[in-house]
Length: 116
Image 1 (cartoon, rainbow, N blue to C red):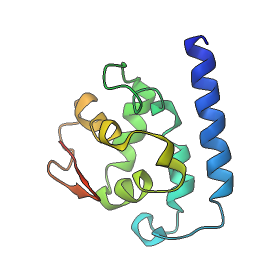
Image 2: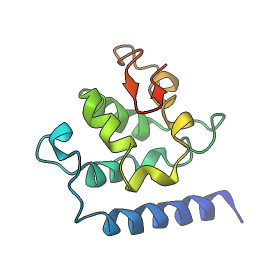
Image 3: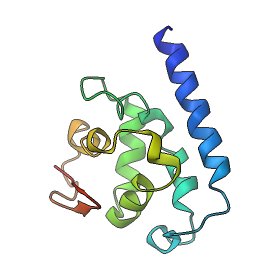
Image 4: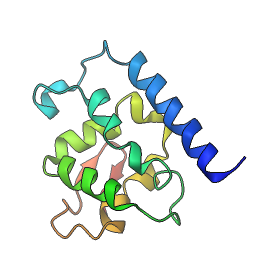
């Protein structure tokens, strides 16, 4: 399967999971009025980077992570949402560092993972 086809399949899976999780509001307070499952969809440009630590991280992914990362508890809620369960969280947690986000919350504990 080609690289673009894999990305489309992963995006389709993320979309299906997002739709399935629309009714769930667990953790919504971390993201204000936004549902973490809905917010996770904004990280779709990060799909390949969240699966492979050697994959390049796109500028659109870094922009989305930078924006969500302004609220570390929301970013954590998004990473732990049903929508994001398809990604390798230990790899996804490295994206802020791979994006060279200087003001990332170093050492922030998110579930079993700590942001490097």
